[in-house]
Image 1 (cartoon, protein in one colour):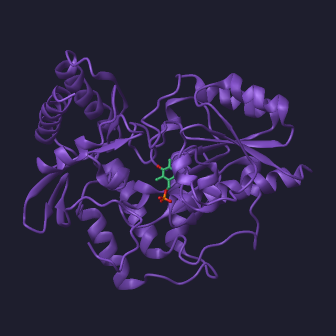
Image 2 (tube, rainbow, N blue to C red):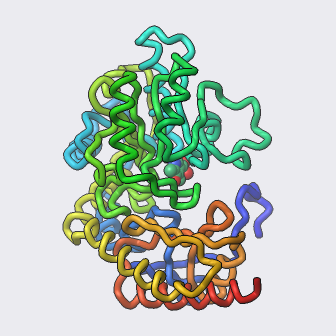
Image 3 (cartoon, rainbow, N blue to C red):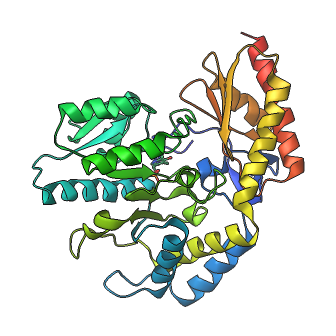
Length: 392
Ligand SMILES: *Cc1c(COP(=O)(O)O)cnc(C)c1O
């Protein structure tokens, strides 16, 4: 432990030196299987040559200028994102929380332009939107908010996957201008809504002139078997936020907007020094190119199905396993009891997993995970779950 770093993280006692695909090596040269990808960041795995080469080439030319000037790499990346998303334009920033901050600013200004003086945004229970003041206020987790009052006003919370709860909130509050929701809740426990949830939400937003704002920071960039998770539905949001896997580890976030939402943030209303700089954009461009070239997005579906079929078969006789759910490579195994201990047990066996919402084992393996690694993951984790539940 190093006292010169603020103790904001409960770190596991391991430090990694290098990686290759889904493998990581620690400073004693032990090899680990990474089934978490730095929390849905390294979707192309570690040390992918396309990212390495893009960063080498770009850093030899130019790392940063300023958003005072045009930036052809940023323009190129924007074109590619718009092509792949059916949105209209994009604001670049450096993280997920910042992308959501931009979305929240769009919603508020949209409200003011409609003459609503104190605009409110509907947010969900068990949601996660980041750690800045506005995004932690939007987050549906008291632990994230504890100690940071006064929170940012203007959020109305409803249960997830419940359209009538939104309708209810609308009848009580005429100042609601937007709904901010994750298409699949990540931190909240890999919660997957009803298949028609987003389409119903789209209809409701149209009817009440609300902005439909999707936080795809964890679910986006191919992880669920579509470029964006909402593309499993037929609905297109007004705002969509991205970060995590967009740069495969190079910090970059994006707030995409469409239609009226795309016209809200005008010159001087928002900005970022680093946002969309040439180095970060070169990494993101390499990510998008590689996803297509290696056909990784559709492989997320086949690999996710294969992994979960394995777990379903091997865990079917374990009565502590409440549910196994996934879309593509966003995977949750819910137990009937808190299981954070499993993370340490797995680490001892050189397997990197995560537990979220106390009882849900969360797996977010890289999209490049291979068959051998899939079998290792399923076998090793199944054994660990049996070991853990035997002690209960
Ligand atoms: C990780 C995450 C965020 C926050 O992203 P940061 O880059 O840590 O600010 C926001 N929303 C969702 C859904 C996330 O998974």
